[in-house]
Image (cartoon, rainbow, N blue to C red; front, side):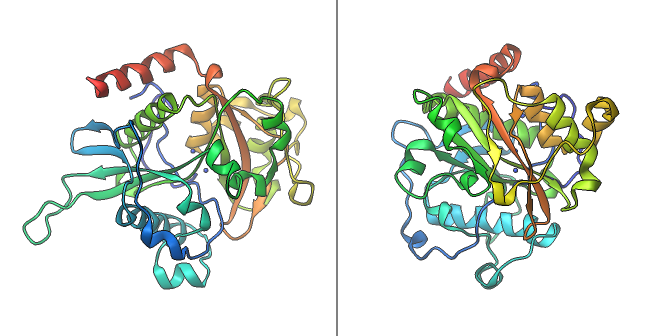
Length: 316
């Protein structure tokens, strides 16, 4: 998503791959303890849980409760210790970022196999994660997390033949926020999207801060320059709606606005994403959220080619 990532940002929700996001932080969701999580064992059918490898790093889908708990611990470290999110009682006690969606979602992990040895054994370390929720799973349970902030029902209803995938809860350990890690995450996402024949990716992406006036430039840019095409509109829920057109279009400097956007959102833009109408203030996480809408058909052919090449190398 971003041609040349830096490594000093710590903002979010959302790819060598020509596109690269240099930092992933998407602290989305509620924070409830999940009693049934201890019984989770993931089976991914014909999809190999290992989706890619680059040097000592491996991207894979979690298959055990232990792996999911490691992802939750990473999320807690990034969202609550590094950033300004305020944990509730359950998270404070467990030192994990948990919610009821964890039991429904697939969890994408990046592992470092060169992590320090413990007790004479090599112990892979979870250094990155992304949470994936397919439409059929969401429909049969609690729906998409995004529906708690945006009215996405009309959007989904307008495309009954398309399969939606929600991306969220993404983060990367600070020392690993670089091109290699994010390249691997997106190789994993692309393999997953291809296997499950996903047509559209959606999710909440975040800008740090809860004062829209301080975010006037990037929010106004997204409103004026990255609105969805006809048939792809979705808006924030009325009770959570915050206007994004704070500045008139003629006062928006696109170059300055792009510089002010979190790397992840810039990455989505370069892939071809558009953004829903209205932002949502999340005071618990100290962020202002925007809705990302990314049909697979909107992704630039050059990126598709790069993704596919990575997938083919993995298959070989």
